[in-house]
Image (tube, rainbow, N blue to C red; front, side, top):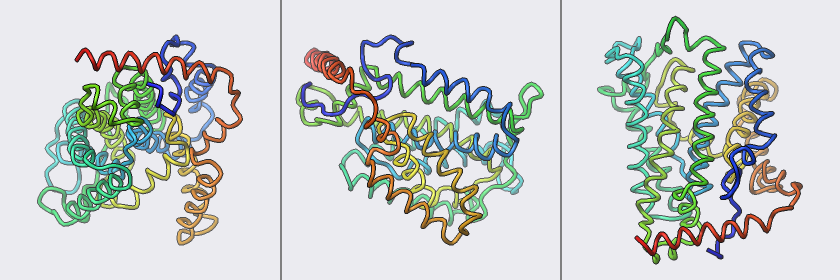
Length: 358
């Protein structure tokens, strides 16, 4: 498909071997993340490391939609919150409302499943629009869910939400302890990251990118564009749902403030700062924003913190619309640029031939 204008990102190039796709950068990063607990205090391990991985996963679900599907969503924290409320209702809490006490291996998969279906429902509504209209619809959904949770005491316990949400103990290991919780977050983040990389190289991933670049052509050759988009929302919901469980275990509580408009916008800011077209971008943006939230707020004050975030966001977008990783792409050697163009044309041809067969 010659009209595709964007190169596949980080492992999305067909024809590469897995080891070649991983690269030395991933290996070094993986080694650092594994030994990070040996160098960091409990504060840095949990409040910086674990929290950044959680926010990065939620932003990764947004990157999957926006980077590969061209669908920018402001409802990803809402999807994560859906999983969090399932944990609060079917697990244990100290709020005296529900708390059925189900084991984690029952309410965990249930929470992810409900979050994924909630995401697919939002996507089913949003895919009927494009561009700014998709952003506005998802913002409207996020706002409606916030007010609904805030005013509904029968199910969501209204404004107070649920407190006393504890991570489980598995084989005598408390998952909320700093080291186990960090590795739990790291394992989930790695699975989500690898899944996105693998998905980008799959037939579905290539088809989704082709739909992003030329929706009319993909529909004309027989692909169900709406079904592909809604399925992408469902996959993004799996990632956001897993992150939502980790988020309530991290905070120990969930309330309407967790899924408010502010956190929804923060996820978008995180994804854009890191880079919306690269799966590692959301995690990079999450680390930057988490460090600023942890340290800069004490220096400039809480009342000026949002101004600082806004200024950093504007500077990065003005310098590099593709985020911090876009700067790397500018200085990265361009050798092999023609290779991705030819390989992409070959893969797009396979996608088109498959469409003709169906």
